Amino acid sequence: MIRPLHILPLVFLALLSGAVVVVRAHRATPAQAAQAGDWRTDVLSGLGNNAPTQATLAHLAAWQRAEGGNAAYNWLNTTQPMAGDSMYNSVGVRNYPDYWTGIAATVRTLTNGYYPRTLVGLQSNTPVVDDAEMGVWGTGGGAVRAQLAQAAQAQAVGQAYMLQGAVGVNVRAALDANGGALQAFTIAPGQVWSFGHSIAPISALGDLPVVCGPAGCYAGGGWCDLSALYVKVADQLGLESSFPAHAGVADSRFPGILLDEQGGGGDLTITNTSARPVTFQAYQEGDTLIIEGGFVDGY
Image 1 (cartoon, rainbow, N blue to C red):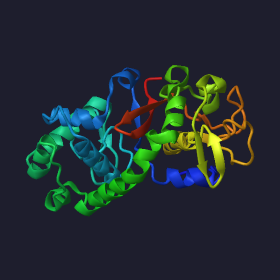
Image 2: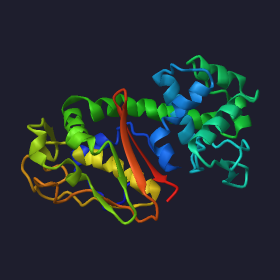
Image 3: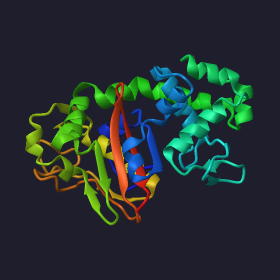
């Protein structure tokens, strides 16, 4: 949830409301931070599906959102006992000690014989929501369907917005700046990370498309939306972020988040107020931009 002080221009707020964004937060050891991949593809691989479709991946993402919670490495809130686990809640959902234990526990649960239709659907890229099986799992089928419907509705608007068209060019330029500095970074305890400083110097991005809306026509439009995605992850991780209100133009070419040539001004900053390093990663699935964040254990 974006705090009230994170005020965006009306044009960008309207577009952001339709964006398809998956935000995840988890813990990782230093080695796992490099080795862990998308939990969905790893679970599906464990089920024998090494070529998942976007529909199958979207199904698992919707299921995860319907589950909710923050159990460690337990995306679907399974109660499967595993070595090194701990109790997450009173109904037996587990925290798992590492990424691959969580993958193994999820695969083991899906193949325990209680979810035959769900299993076959995931294996054959024909995912289904079986109310009886979801009842056994503990999550109602209606909750998963609601998440699927919400994602489908948002996809029609936001997917084309975030990484296509003129705004998509601007967002991609920021993501590719300085060797992809926004795509993967770590914030040490007590360190302040800056969106603007990560992509500076601004002039190196070249001439960017102008985006028009109620707030006016500006080059670089869309960066405030991109910044807001990092804010969502920071909020979920409990970190401190600052995203000043947009009031005025610091640079007539790039006023989206009021950056000057060196990335200063009305910039997004995230402060790691925890005792552990935190990593951020951005990657693309189709036209959807996904931002992930997680704490690095072992320090």
